[in-house]
Length: 273
Image (cartoon, rainbow, N blue to C red; front, side):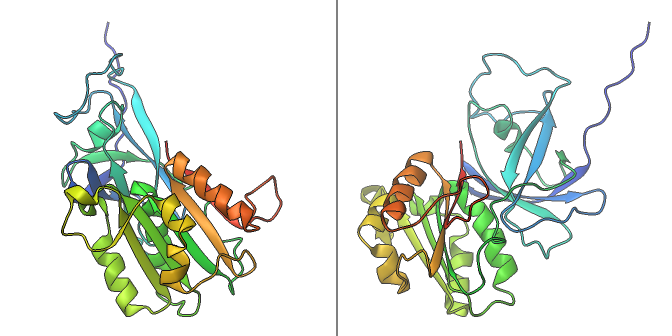
């Protein structure tokens, strides 16, 4: 008796790989077919079969992944929606995970599964054009904001954008160089990087402290010149759930509201992990 071979799941190729550090990587993936349309802030699915190799840093799998099973996960898109050649993803290594240890083993030219469409409501669609946008993130929660900025700053020189990004060390601040350059070129963008372990990173000269502490201390308002007023600025939160919850509560004390059903909101939330 003969058995049919499992169908080939691959439909895209890695055309770029930038290692920010051993636990953070930027992957550019080019689909074999025409790229789907997407809105900045949306996510897409990446996948690899259980037979795909894993990086050496990966923890042992308690339950081995089925060889023919396609492991899929959703990741926010970091590339501009105007870019039609590839999609970009900013990914952190979860050593105990099923997929990221396999994604980190990919190299230029590696094959991968890319889902056929983008999804998600974490976009600027519901924000009135006259309002400022404050983008708050930890870690790879920055990814959807990079897509927004790369797309919107091309033509929008009026709307104010503020990025507050937190990480443990300066070398964990992905896209820092690009954001610093954009902030120099675009007066409507303010970029505020922050780290929490300054004692181990003495050459960093930016803000120090957890994101929620900086918001509470008024750092965001001091550096941007904006007021946390829901009538004038809407806030996006993406990343660590503890940060999201803490900042959300501070904002609600100032009159902000998170989404409830179809009602309009002024806090937009995307939690990671």
